[in-house]
Image (cartoon, rainbow, N blue to C red; front, side):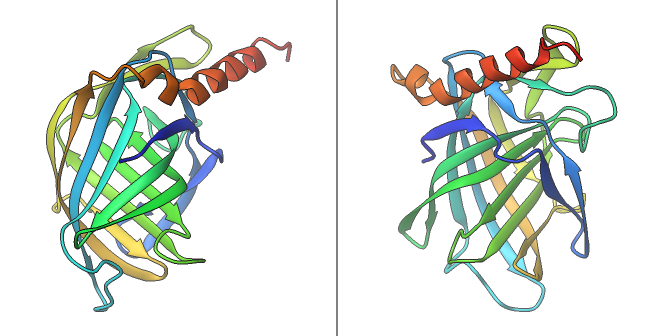
Length: 216
């Protein structure tokens, strides 16, 4: 399970577009606006188009504690996709019965069409890169304008979802393109320690809001 949620480390990330092409566009970092926490779960398989297989078995599992509600800065026309925001996460993945920790990776939520993108480096071994670009059958979150000036508040939507393989869901491990499929869920977590998990994100939001008030 992932334990730490904060601001995305970078303003730009690599987005997959099918198996062959990719683009680099900005995705706004998000910060928690509530101590409430959801558990984001993904149980998926990765099929390489060249036969190499980074995971020992299928499915592998990712579990992430994420803020149930976040605020992010998304002025019109600047983000990679409307309603997208990024979180920096640390935690574990489970594969073939073995649990392995990771840290400082990027999890991105996109609203329309619904997508969950997991971007990892030094994940399974040093200097590797894993991209999961999953189109979701279902709703990941709802967003409304927050404090104005381009800020949005997103509330995650609890429930189960499947990864749609007929809408260009894709993945890659290093230079090896692949296909991703499987299912997942967003589940509210009634946990007393939620506020501590999200402290970093809340402080980051205060920093962002402070910067937004500076004269231009």
